[in-house]
Structures are given as structure tokens and as C-alpha cells.
Amino acid sequence: MVSPPRRSGRPSGHAGGGDGALARARGRRAVNTRDVEALVADDEESAARKVAELLAAAAGTGSEIVLTGGSTPGRAYELAAELEPDWSRAGIWWGDERCVPPDDERSNFRLAQEKLFAKLEGQPGRVHRIRGEDEPGSASAAYEQKLRGTTLDLILLGLGPDGHVASLFPHAPGLDETERLVIPAEPKLDPYVERVTMTPPALRGAGRIVFLVTGEQKAEAVARALAGPPDPAVPGSLIRSERGETLAILDQQAALRLRD
Image 1: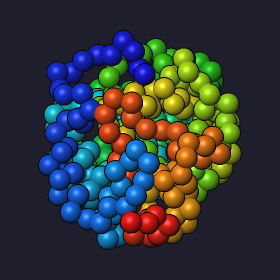
Image 2 (image 1 turned 135 degrees about the vertical axis):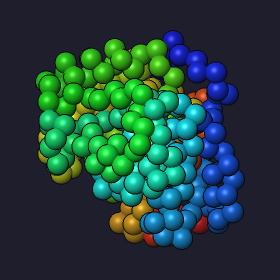
Image 3 (image 1 turned 90 degrees about the vertical axis):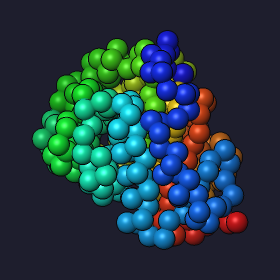
């Protein structure tokens, strides 16, 4: 857990009032998973909109929000900016970062800058960037110092085709971490640059974890991460909120191997 927690005055396990959006989403077909509520949207755009609703609601009530990188969440960020253009009460974090400068096309910060921040009328009041341009050990230590003592309300995660989350790859030593909240990580997929990543204790400490996964190429990983047993070969199977709820928002293709 991220401790000692900074209490925000909101009920534990609720990411800034996103429950109205969830209630609407729950009208979709549900599937059997382990300790996760899976919501299956019609397509990638619908999945992005459902995540955007959660992000916008959380931003509007001043939550501490953890963003993800990769190719999937960009549309959700654009839609979230449309739904809630004022993020001045929110705090922004990242679950991981590639060790590149913030203007590098591989940077997770740059993705958020282009798809979210640049479209807002009110910028986030607190932006906690991982300094990817620094040496990984010093960058991770500095980020842990910022993170420790913070209550994270909503963490958005993707899921790789190999089952990785953030920069926690299959069988990585960091999966066994119990004390540190942020560590350096070696790349196991393209782009092959060093990473800085939150650890399982940091991720599990969030009030709400939201997986956003789309595409048939992720279907096997989705089945193993959401419905299979905890397995270090599938890091996503190890990440569940310890104080709130864990959601998975999928399109039809990503959910192909889940069964009612």
C-alpha cells in the first residue's frame, strides 16, 4: 500500500464521483473474471468513451489520477478533455515512463501532453512527471519520494499482449517487490529503452484500478490476466485494488476469450 495515505475527504475506493458513468456502463454484457468487474463495450471508441467518463468525473472532483502510455488510451484522453475541460483540481501521475526526454515521441508524458493537456481549458493543478531524461535509479528514487504519502484515487492501466502492466513484464524481479513504490525496469518489448515503473504495492494501493484493453491481439492476455489465477508470467493477473475496486473496460475483440 502507498503509506501513510493522504486522505482527500472522499470515500475510500471511489475515484471522484465516477460511479454515475459506471452505472451506465454496467448495462453492457458482463463476463466472468477473478476479482474484476469487466465491462464489454461495442467497439474501441465506446470503450474509450467509458474510460473518458471515469477520468472526467475524477478530474472534476480533484482526484489523484494515474495515467498510462501506449497506443490505446489516447482517444480516451481526448474524449475526457471534451467531457471535463477544467482539470485544475486534479493531480496527475504516471504508472510508468520510458527513459527518454519529455518531448520524445516514445514518452508517456508527451502522449498525455498532446492528447489531453493541450485540449484542456484548465490545466491539472498538480502534474507529477517521471523524469525520463534522468538516470533510471535517480528518477525512480525521486518519484518514490513524491509518491509516498499520497492516496491514489484512480489508476488507468493498459495490458500488453504478453500480459504486462505499466513496465512490469513477465517474471520481472519487480513483481516480487514489497517495499519500494517505484523502481527502474528493463524493457522486454519495443521500444527497447530503460523504464521507470510503479511497483505492485503502489498500484494495488489505488482506490480504483481501471484496465483499458482493446483489440483481438490482446484477447489471450485478457483471459489470462482477468480470469486466470495469479501468475508472474502474466503480471496483469497480480494487480487488483486492495482497498477499492478493479474494473476492466474492453471492446468486443479483447473480450473474445472470456466466457459468460
